[in-house]
Image (cartoon, rainbow, N blue to C red):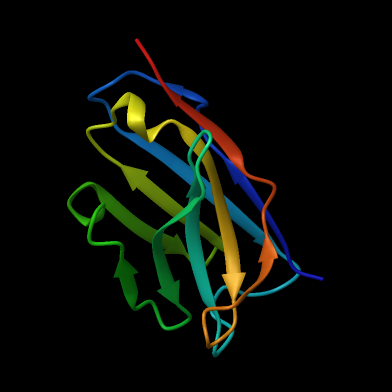
Amino acid sequence: QVRLQESGPGLVKPSQSVSLTCTVSGGSITTAYTYWAWIRQLPGKGFEWIAHMFANGDTYYNPALQSRTSISRDTSKNELALRLSSVTPEDTAVYFCARTDNNLLIDTWGQGTQVTASS
């Protein structure tokens, strides 16, 4: 059974960058025909797709966030990472990592990690 666990600093000051990690267990992030996504839930709003990475390392970014977002992976640790720069209070959200199938349908969610951008 695949499990995803997000971790991050929790609180970040506006204009700074925040880095989050998603540790995957029970399965490999290089398994064929899977995507690994970062998604956030903004307060009082729906979910927003941030970016995803295919098993071969190819990436896709939400155009609205692309200029401030970078995703990467460490295959030796079976981890994914998200870096969001120039954070504003509007980036305050719960950030999730998720696994999807080849049709980008999510089949496994992490529990999420709260990021609050505040001075």
